[in-house]
Length: 396
Ligand SMILES: Cc1ncc(COP(=O)(O)O)c(C=O)c1O
Image (tube, rainbow, N blue to C red; front, side, top):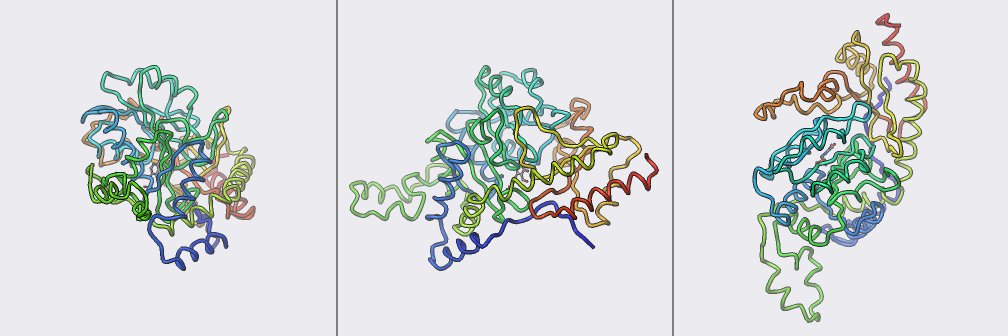
């Protein structure tokens, strides 16, 4: 049976060669590949600094921790977060002693609804966690002025979106800090891996330190004491085993960096086919629009389609029944990121009626893959499956 998976890994000969180079060098901790990755990633996201970590969640966690230290936030301060996103966006807020305040999402694009932000702000609100979901930038040109007006920090959870621009400005360059994931089935996939971008030098150093057990930033890589002739050598020696913060062990290796670098250097081979596949699906599923809401582009935004989201419109279609039908045909599916109804957040006493869009998505939303390895035959197979389902259920 044909299988249509949600994601794929972009392993090219270049990636294999880079990984071999790392193995042959014997140097697997932070080194030249990590540095090249960070430099290129920062440049591609119009940022001065990029800091690697071992996951998108780790990057988000240290980003919030570092902001809390630098801005003097207190336990119990609030961060606005969309009511539809992956659980990690909320977990890192709680793990940092902060409180998530949910804001309902946009019914077309499933990201933070800008017009609901202001009424959610209180005296204790310190920041907005904006999530660029599924490959499309959030409504940043509306969100940024609100954040500025209320002196709120912006944390971009861009774990699902790289390279995409909104009004000509790329994700990762809008907020105080932005975090990206390189986990399996994302865009750049290194197995595990995360990266944070910022223009703030202090924030970059602090995030790097927190990823390295909170070590003094004089010694964050084994090369930092390599130059014994430097005047500052004795200073490095005195400080290289000092720990300034309660940090984490969130480092990544040269192997992930090598794989990641090869993908950054060929990023168009990842996103252009995804955009083409999504456009094909949208064109050929057009006849089913009375039954499903298909993804659409926000005006002025690019979409790089980490996945292809759909929402059931026709009440006669039962989501689990449809997903079972698709899965039995080898078409992988996932629910569209249910969040506020997760058992883990029961203690937050969330009223689903306060978030009507997310509540609808929790019952009717799902996504399928549209990645670069899918062929036209795979896409036609998906389109046929959707049409067969509608016909078999005698819905049309
Ligand atoms: C929106 C969002 N935030 C955070 C994460 C966490 O990334 P990671 O799995 O690399 O920790 C993900 C991962 O899927 C995500 O989709």
